[in-house]
Length: 527
Ligand code: CA
Image (cartoon, rainbow, N blue to C red; front, side):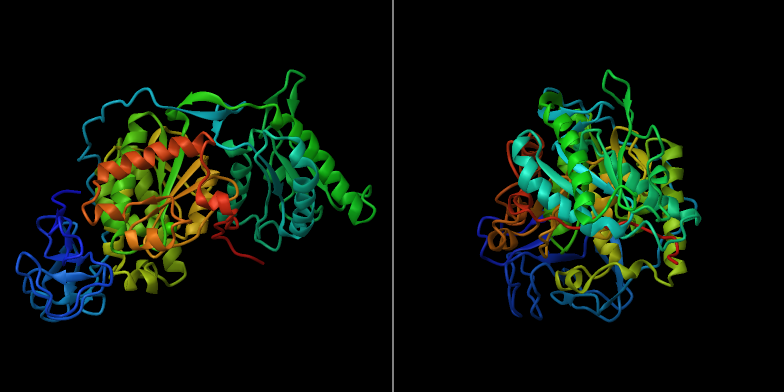
């Protein structure tokens, strides 16, 4: 992000627009409520019509067919003449064609290595496999949706009767999902939901201990979901395998006996988890998933650049950061391949994008299927504009690795984790990749939260932060009014991440117990 020019910073209530790059011929109106026709900005620009907050205004006379430039990128072409001071929205610009996946620049724009950032630590739960949890949670994996009502019943009883006896355990969570049966389980793409469920059970926040509840007749049998040895835990007495309660076992006579079996197994796991204590670990043990949802035109001006700054801090400290959301970065593929640490990383990125292009083709959709009515109301005209504002979450480090949907992250540093942009599916796949902390930016506002991993929410606008004061953890809107810099908010976020990871602070979503369901990505057929 360069040349962020904020007009008239000193008097925020006066007309204010934000231009991202010196080459841009549009800017966005920053004031709450927008500005009416006739408004004169300090530079002399006069609005010829009302422009809502976050929406674009033409800074020059645009002729029909002219490129509309934001982020120093053509985000579209004028469908008619747009005089200086006009409102530039999705109805008056045409979207550019999607960039191809051939002849891309490969590792051509590798940034200088960022200077190391030493000395930052947090208090985490060290796991047998070396990973570190930010929470200490008993997760109950389900092989199939059929068992979810029973597990939910058992979880309520465990929370009421057992959890108070094990104060070092933060929560008990049933990993409910809609997969497991009635699906083409041998279809090639079925590996995605299956490995997602397997790797979620291995998430660092679950302490390396897993228990599973199975129905008995389902397609996704326990040993297919969790092959023996998936979770080797050295206890001194040998390896402990995954515990399984099967509801159709002959020994279960009546509902109460099923619940008793689940509760008894849960108690043995709670004892193990309760023996764990937080210890001081370097920030390099953080695995942070970043994403955005309910985006507006401020997302790419305030919150996402601040997240990008924090991403760089984390990478400098040796941590792992994942950015995702295929359709929101697809239009900036050249920016990403040129930042790939190695040609192999660039090839992996192109492979994931190509797979996703074909997936969308199969459903007769294209990238314009992304952008919601709320995005447009918030000023984002199309996916190109949205993508440019989304990519800045990734900061400036070289891209060190690529993670396929449902796989675990293997490389430290900045990773591209290929997931749909859907908030819930992206969060679920980042959780499978090993995320132990989640950062989520929003402009329109969403109460999103997860039971399994703390979610820090960053508001793009002060108006949202004020109205949703007990849902938003950080306000990046102060960047738009010039009251804070991107660096200020980036450091604030970095420090909050350490507090939340250490369990010293709860996010608002945790405070209220806001928990969105897991949402598996299943590109394979159901039967
Ligand atoms: Ca999203």
